[in-house]
Structures are given as C-alpha cells and as structure tokens.
Amino acid sequence: MISYDLAGKTALVTGGASGIGFATAKMLAGFGATVAVNHLPDDPRGPEAVDKLIDAGGKAIGAPGNVGEADDAERMVLQAVKDLGRLDLLVSNAGTPGTRRRIAPPELDLITEELWSLLLATNLLGVFRCAKAAAPALKAAHGAIVNTASIAGLGRAGSSLAYSATKAGVVSLTQNLARALAPEVRVNAIAPGAVDSSWMVEWTNEERQQSIERALLKRRCQPEDLAEVIVFLGFGAAMVTGQTITVDGGLTL
Ligand code: NAD
Image: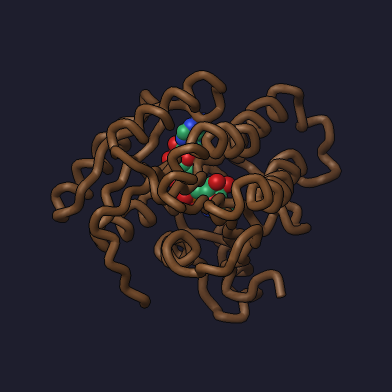
C-alpha cells in the first residue's frame, strides 16, 4: 500500500463511524491527518469511533450532524471546518439504502414517496450540501472531494431502483462539481461493489457466495480496500478529476 505523510492535513468524513467511512478515517489518521468524523447525532458509534482513533494515536474530533437535512448538513460542515482550522479533504460517504431487503426492479409498489425522499435527501442532496458548504475552505487549501457512489449507480440494479438512481446522480454530480470547483479542487468518486460492512441490506449466504464467485478476484471488498482508493484520490492522483473509480474486484466486468 502507498504511504502518505499527512501531518498538518485535515479531512472530514461523512458517515465516518462505521464501514467504509470508519476505515477511511482510520487510514487518514494513521497517516497523520486530523480527521473530523461525521455521524448521525444519536449514533453512539460516533463518539466511540473518535475514541478508537485517538486511542490508536491519531488526531480526531466528532462532527455530529444529519447530511439529509439542509440546515444541519451546512452547520455540521462549517463547524468541522472551524474546529479543524482548514479543510484538505471532504469524503462524502454517508449513505443509506432505506431498506433491509433488496427491492427488485418489478416491485414498483414498494418504491414509496417516503423511500425516494429519504434516499434523495441523504445519498444525493447530502453530497451536494456538504460540497457547497465546504467549497470555500477546500478552495483555500487546494483540497479535494471524494464521494462514495456505487456500482448501482453505473447500471447495476442495487438495493432498489431509487437507490441506484441516487448513486447515478452522485456520478453526475461528481463530474459537475469537478467543473464547478476547478482548478483549485479535484472532485472524484469511488463506486464500491459488494462490501463487507455494517451496511443495512441483508445478504443471504447464497448471495454472498455468488458475489465472491462472480468477482474476478474471488473475494468481497473489505472497507479498507475502498479506504485505500479514497485516500489515493484525496491526496495522490494530482491530475485526476471528475472520475468515478470502480472498486469491486472485477464483479461487474
Ligand atoms: P455503513 O452503513 O456502515 O455506512 C453508512 C454510514 O452513513 C453509517 O455510519 C450511517 O449511520 C451513516 N449515515 C446514514 N445516513 C446518514 C445521514 N443522513 N447523515 C450522516 N450519516 C449518515 O455502510 P458502508 O458500506 O460503509 O456504506 C458507506 C457508503 O458506501 C454508502 O454511501 C453506501 O451507499 C456505499 N456503498 C456501500 C456498498 C456495500 O456493499 N456496503 C456498496 C456500494 C456503495
């Protein structure tokens, strides 16, 4: 794995208390960055994540806030920027499927207005709100944004057609935010495949096994596999912007 010296650098990771977000926060802190860990205000994993990073010798602070609510998302980002003193990297990773079981495309009756509202507010508008609020600080620092999209946003069915549409929106938003914030700020995204995380959607053993067999690299992604690419897009990759990088072990090839 590439090593980075991130002493003096700062990052805000949304949805940073679990899964891909926590693995990213841990990797960034391990390389010396000070990390603001965003989490839902009532999620006890938030303060626990901050404690774990500090116990491991890292620098971390909490950034409670709901990216699905306009005012709270803006307040959370501005507070994190103030607490960190500057912002070099925004990782917009918070996301939800809004369902515990996969909703197949023909099951249109299960796609409710409430599901759309939750998914659009969190997965798509949340990404925009955080980018907008962080833009001045990121421009000042010549920083970067990395958004978490999904292979569901690149043509796979995903946990529901609404979820896939929000992640396709993240791919588009990544391209246009790259235009909006250039030349100071690079904006990219990752598109994870099947990841072993605390993701809400339940996999049967058979589905898990199939996802391993179908992947060219014959295993599922671990959160650290995604974190490695996020850190690279954030602090390496100097001439990469507007791109969505698939990280799926060859599952979709
Ligand atoms: P996860 O459930 O552990 O992480 C999602 C995090 O976002 C959780 O900590 C959750 O509490 C937080 N969150 C949800 N709504 C929020 C809100 N409104 N405000 C702030 N935080 C909020 O699962 P994960 O797999 O680590 O998911 C991270 C990202 O990866 C998500 O955007 C997800 O869509 C994407 N993704 C996951 C998979 C997978 O197979 N697990 C595949 C493709 C993409």
